[in-house]
Image (cartoon, rainbow, N blue to C red; front, side, top):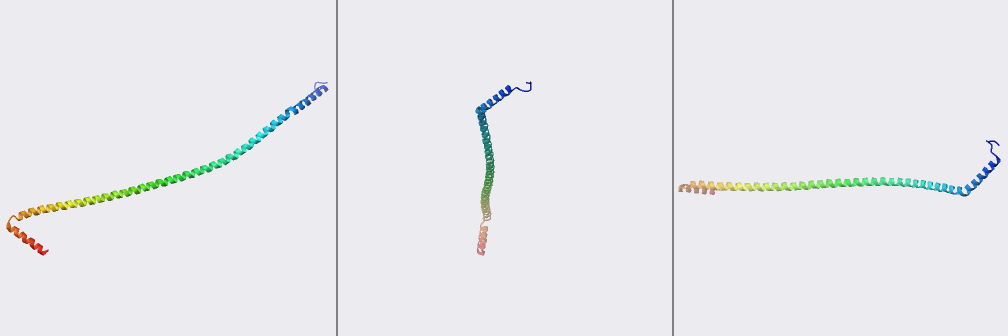
Length: 164
């Protein structure tokens, strides 16, 4: 036999060793290996299903988050509108109250001015009357110093009374 062609004994023992190894692998190794492969396949399938479920849940959560964000924005806008309305109402109320207070102060000032004016007018009239009385008294004393002037004055006064 040559170098390249194997002998019958070598083929026999190689074949026998192959079949013994095949029997031992089939008996002891193939089942655990196949079971491990099946377990691995099942775990991959369950992981894929979990990933799909997580993806669907994420889409649902994203939709829920968008709805929550939309609701929060709407609530924020409503709160801002309400705050603006309250601010405008407060400003309007304050302006109204200030206008009313200014009107009251203005009216009180006008009344005070009128009162002071009337008081000053009365005071001026009183002073003019007092001055007129003093002047009349001085004139009358000067004119009535003699008896003839007194008689003439009484006659004139009587004539003025009779005419009226």
